[in-house]
Amino acid sequence: MASKNDTKPNILFILSDDQGPWAMHCAGNSELITPNLDRLANTGMRFSNFFCTSPVCSPARATLLTGRIPSQHGVLDWIADGDMGADNTIGWLSQEKIIEYLQGMPGYTDILAEHGWKCGLSGKWHLGDSRKPQKGFEYWYVHQCGGASYYGAPMIRDGKNVNEERYITDVITDEGIGYMEKTLEHDEPFYLGVHYTAPHAPWRNNNHPEEYLAMYDDCAFESVPDLPPHPWTSGGMERERFVEELKGYYASITAMDANIGRLIDWLEDNGLRENTLIIFTSDNGFCFGHHGIVGKGNGTRPVNMYEESVKVPAIFSQPGRIPMNVEMAALVSGYDFMPTLLDYVNLPNPEAEKLPGHSFKKLLLGESMDVRENLVVFDEYGPVRMIREKEWKYIHRYPNGPHELYDLVNDPNERINLINNNEMQEVVTSMKMNLEAWFVQYVDPSMDGTHEPVTGKGQIGLVGPAGKGKPSFKA
Image (cartoon, rainbow, N blue to C red; front, side, top):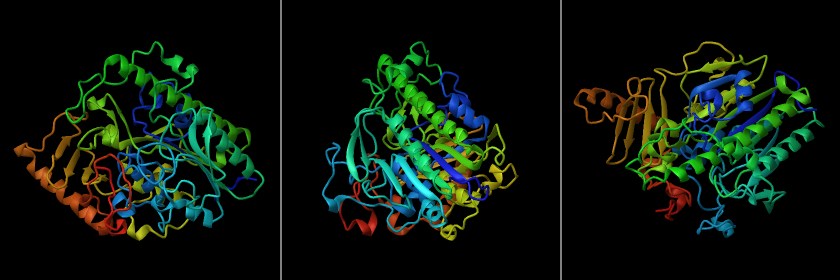
């Protein structure tokens, strides 16, 4: 049956889509109804400063899986082609345009599979060639593309395209539970990725069950700011429309939360809870009114690196091993995820020498550690790069800006850009030097995002020489 061995725990990795770090009740949002995420946080460790490596889905997901930053794995924007038609309608392109973006790059699931874990995936993939099982997964039920309606969702089951008429959050959960039930027949541990499309748009037009929408009928939505549109957006929306969209966003999270409860219940009912590491996080953050934006990194032109875009919710839970009901403020990143997970299950990381991430296993076990010198994290989105220390954030846009500097102690909402403040130039110089030194150390020159015209409209091909001169991004 599934593992009951502490040295080889089962792993349930739950990944949401476009969930801001503020979008959980246990993160301080009193209006959001998330009893099961709260339950998970109460039985584990919640990180309040967990950063994605790029504030958009495909690059961040690729980094979680491989430990490589975007300028090492070459996925620099959300994948808009290869799994979707060029006109953004669901459908398959000719075979030569379907790209396996991470081909030849080992992921942690490859390593888990090599060491005896049975690996299954239910939900969103969005890393190219969705019809083809990849990265050590023996079970492969995935979304055909990156996002679509919650009813009639385009999925792939047994290698065939299907449209799921039922609410897709429920179906993704059903498929995941079905896979875990099959593992009861074996002695090997399992790894199951449950990758929800929630709370990604669409939110309106009956995309979510009425029972969850009704929970927010009387909500004042004071948990998000009511600000004028950011100058880098195309404009705002009327308050009535904004509230309707936000209601759908909240409902999709609560519906997902109910399904997360089903997953936890199954583990408990089968005596596997204490022998299973449960991880919950999101691919990237999201602003819903924050800074006058509804969106993530590509919610503005130029793309943004605001805290709500680059931070994600993150909870790790395994009762008896990880301390319970702990909030951890240390700065950690998506590129630390692969080394941490492999370290947690005592597996080697053959990619360690060329990857930037470091294991924070000691933190998970309640032990002290220096996460990294000066508590620094880095982010990138094409030609936009960020260095984030405990007190300062510097954003550099190649080649000509605009650049940003924020004092996060005195201005945690990032409202005052100090980049042109004469008294801050020493800070700017120091942070720019550290940013460039770090990226020079890890960037693969053939995939360097600063050389690519990433606009946030989507990636349609391989980058650098591998692209053979063809367009790699939508203009």
